[in-house]
Amino acid sequence: MVKAVLGVIGGSGIYDLPGLREVRWQKVESPWGEPSDALCFGTLGDLPMVFLPRHGRGHRIPPGEINYRANIDALKRAGVTDVVSLSACGSLRADLAPGMFVLVDQYIDRTVARAKSFFGTGCVAHVAFGDPVSPRLLDRLEAAARAEAIALHRGGTYLAMEGPQFSTLAESRLYREWGCAVIGMTNMPEAKLAREAELCYASVAMVTDYDSWHEDHGTVDVAKILAVMHANADSAKRLVARLAADFPAEHEPCPIGSDTALTYAIITAPEARDPALLRKLDAVAGRVLG
Ligand SMILES: CSC[C@H]1O[C@H](OP(=O)(O)O)[C@H](O)[C@@H]1O
Ligand SMILES: Nc1ncnc2[nH]cnc12
Image (cartoon, rainbow, N blue to C red; front, side):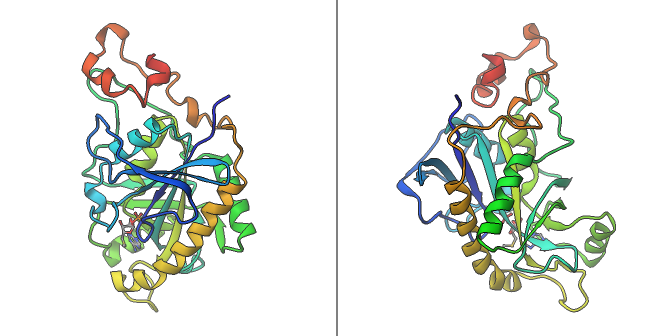
């Protein structure tokens, strides 16, 4: 049996997880560089949990400078099987009001200046990503939100922008025409890397604002976001506590194969593989590389 370990990546406004027991912050070394912070290990009920504040405690790191590879690698090394990503986001739809939580099921990646893969020259891999989110995690998040009476919308496309500046009005309108539901700066390449690391992944996008398109709300700024973010953070912590309380002790095989994503993904012939890269892949791809 594979023991379930729930990883939580906390976004803006979420720098700890109250309610964790046996808490210990511990630095995890990664061959991919520095994770955003030490990892916070603990238990909620009987479930082992690992928490990582995406921007570091004190919100030191901007979205474009987060070492997403080190973060996902460190969570993998810590034994995490499932990752819930918590994120502040702007809404691109009138019906998704500030305060609502959206369970994202698709992404559009418009980030441009980030390392997006663990693989590369010396070990090439192409994982499937048509279904980027683990549906079973979504089911569990939906049930937890219902139990906590948190307003939630299931489904929607998250537009990942580079930032750190917010969108222009023209960009905001364009993303609405593309049918996107929410916008943020961090879920890519995080979701791609989680898939490469064979982690089940789901994003909870917590709406803080209407981005720049809404005539009644003007353009977005950090003051508007902060006004909603703290209430969202309290709900998110309740959501996670409920999720953990109902989480199975044994890792459930992912119905879309997130946890076996590398089985047929590596295309480089064994004799052409770069030993130095293979060493860095020990945690992420250890299951298939041996
Ligand atoms: C503080 S507003 C902009 C900031 O918030 C979001 O971060 P996260 O996804 O980590 O909650 C957004 O992506 C920006 O990084
Ligand atoms: N409107 C917005 N655009 C990008 N990231 C955000 N995070 C919170 N609100 C956002």
